Image (tube, rainbow, N blue to C red; front, side):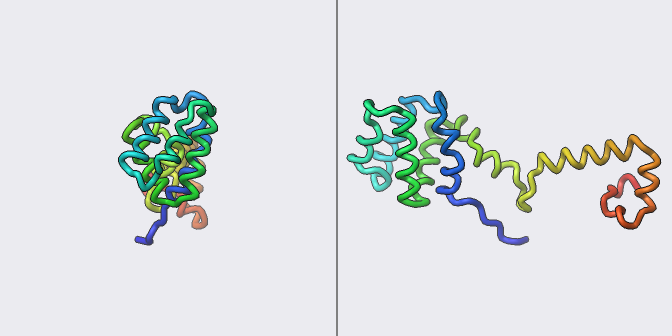
Length: 153
């Protein structure tokens, strides 16, 4: 089985940034909890000064969150990973709804989108079952034989 590489946490955070910063996605209270966790539990991730900057109530929440994400991306993959950990602890449902999580869940180890493949396979089976002439033609056609399911031969 070939070795599969997954996107780094920084790449995933870049992909999830729009989703996270949309209005109403994260409350001010939740953003503060994430910042405090990154500062208190993982002080090497956010210093006191950085935490104060990102918790500044005078700045818009959208701006603070965007700045926090950009800051973590500049610091590296470990910092982005800890952001995801804090998000999972404080907002598990939101964490599970992230676009990058959905891609990781739906992609098989081969990198195939299983939902899309199931749709294509179902569509082919329906088409072949609905027209016996097509089934007969495909059965004897050497070129398209690889596309016919063994159970239909």
